[in-house]
Length: 182
Image (cartoon, rainbow, N blue to C red; front, side, top):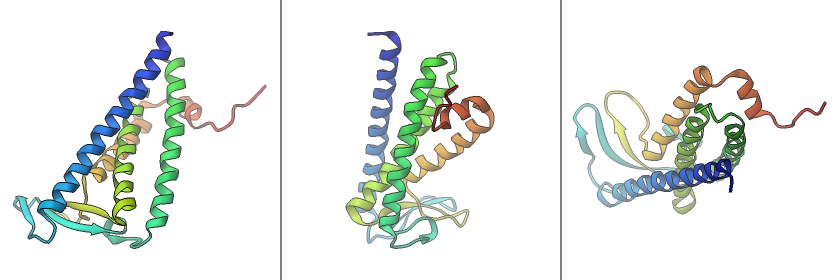
């Protein structure tokens, strides 16, 4: 086997293992929330800053689109398909440009985003709602969970990478749907 083929397989394995680890952490924290917070008073972790407060959320942030579970499932599946498509493209770009380490960082970012999307998708499919339990006291912010943290951090990193790390021609190559034939 070629060295590039091994690197692609290692990247796939790395992404898969990372997704499973992040998913396990998300699901474990939600299990702990159900076990220790459901039908209980809030647990203040850092007074004035963060508390644990159990919430079954059948919508998005601040309860937006409450009860639209089918819509959330469809959007999540489409998002996951799009990210998978981009990750396949990233593998091809890494093969062409092995010196550009930014592609591995972008692939890791997509991996974290996948874990977050899957974490909440599992909740929606299994429960019909997402288990949220982290509440900020210092700002009016929706109650959230570990998967939400993954999505938020990955989106911020993606924004930074798109602004400062990815060249315009690389972004064009990544997002190109059809190749132009001359």
